[in-house]
Length: 367
Image (cartoon, rainbow, N blue to C red; front, side, top):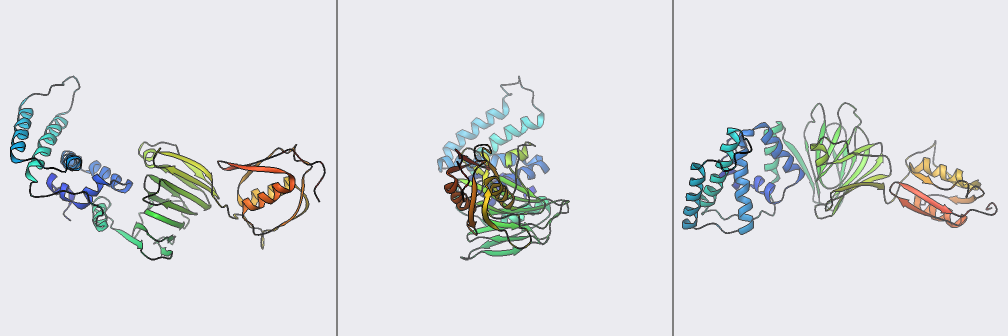
């Protein structure tokens, strides 16, 4: 692929990666083109004209006839010769020329592409995207695709490990930049990140950005799904949207173990809650013991909070006489809570990242 800096509008419109960016944009492609235009602002009219052409073809899928094209061109020539009709908003000469050129180029493209039938691309050669990215960063991205039915373990140059689930792919530079470690995920992957406070680890997955310095977490960004999730196993993770990053917003979610961020693609909302199956995050010497013998329920809840990194809220006054005798073992957290609540006559609900226990109390201690 030729250097995008030398592309004409016609060449952009025929480029597979550019077509993909127009018809099926992703966070990666949006970021690529915004970076490209920031570095080469003089290409804005060319890119805009090519994009306008593709969008017009997408809507109609019908190219103009020679007669229609001639009439359209005559109209454009008149526009180029006539002064601007809305001078009340001052514009720079570059912008005025750019807008007029865009109008003309869009029509020229429509007239000159009679030999080329444009269709919406269902797929594209991702090597094109990698080469295109290298124009901006000077770094070619490696790509791993898991086409098997089993998880695929990948070791990155910094020592981090990614377990890629089937039908998932990841892109990353062969060697990370000195200031940050950037990767791009499509599908599901578990990240065990090597700690480096001077080199943040960033994962782009659709419209969601995940940033850490050293921790482990799972991202699910399935293309057909309605949500994107980031679930933390160890450490702390910052999660925010692409819009928040572009607007330098401080609207970020800080996740701790057994918390997850859910991004609703339809509404654009990013929320935080507990993971579906919390796992142990704190281990004493040896193994955790959940065998209780006439233990105050406050002690039981405190033990669970420390072991799973969760917050359990309850009325300590109402439950002050409730004790528990039970050999809890390897049951999941919520199964443990089922047993406890059945024993003391209480119920529990999960509210965002909190577990709220409600009960009227115990007349006598449970033996």
